[in-house]
Image (cartoon, rainbow, N blue to C red; front, side, top):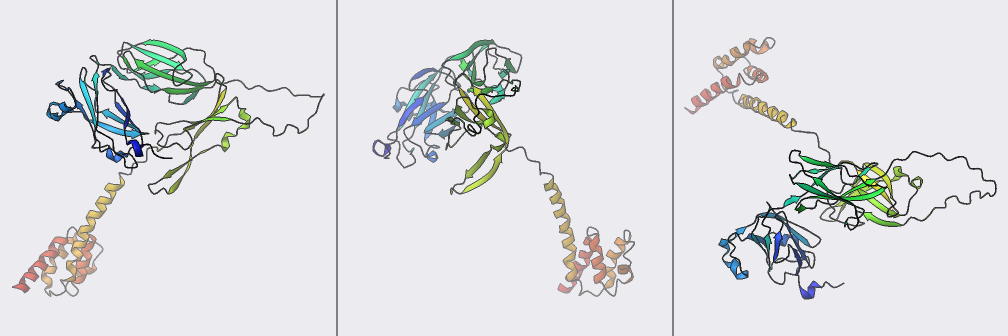
Length: 430
């Protein structure tokens, strides 16, 4: 298939906030969508965001005197043709911001941006609250009852809490306004609704704030087991007629999708959605497993062990679908600290240095014949030396022996041994 950009070139498809948009939330980030996949290495030095704090911007020519503008510090990320610029801190209220893209940005086949791109937006006059963050229950949690939801308190007067059966929130099951709290670190709320077995999507936002990331839970009520009475068919007998006869399984969805890449590290559930209600007796969850592989830069496969976790089966009667869900255990648990091993190695290296120093001069003092000077270091170690009497009895005949004996305690005799060596060497030179 031909790449359209080979003829029309690389272009910006859309930008958010849009050009000339006003009343932009100060907690926003900037998203730029391109017409093809970008070479990420060409983004770093080819994007800049200015703040027009003097409000002198009129057109592109106004940027030539860039000393009148402030460069906005931030970070960039890229995925699926979308460049995201996240400022290091929220935008200022009632201010003007200018996004500039250089034409040196290229796609993966080498096409450059057809022309430099500029976009301007205006922030709100009163700061909004940032995006809410749901802290409990865990994303993808499977529960038998309606859980209590918690999110970080932003000291907002009130919050909007919504529950839906789809992540677009087109059909709401619950839409409530929750009073704020100025004293607690978290806001807690337990919704009340007719919960059936299935999957639910949740989101929350502060008054005049941004919606949280969509949260997802599974509800599976616990039912008592029913023991069937013994069947006594007498009218007909189909011996082994229905053995092995099961309805076909129709898989509707994989999550994450099959062959998908760059999945978020926050993904803590994996599921398969099957059409209809699946009899759990048909599934042996002990035989199910998740197996991971990674690819290096040279596309060489490296296999990994199977991932530990738990399996569950949830039936959603609203959509008449069954979810086979895998919830992985914590990955990469904290490793044991190995720092104490380092200080153990350091002191062992230090004492080896003094032991080597006295052994070096022992090769040279064979030439001096005066035993009187060599007897002085023998007198010093006599205090701790109770057993090694041999070097004390014969210091004059074999001067090499007393030189070897102080090596057991190199710190004391090392200094006196060097003195006679220096004196002898001095006499010979003289």
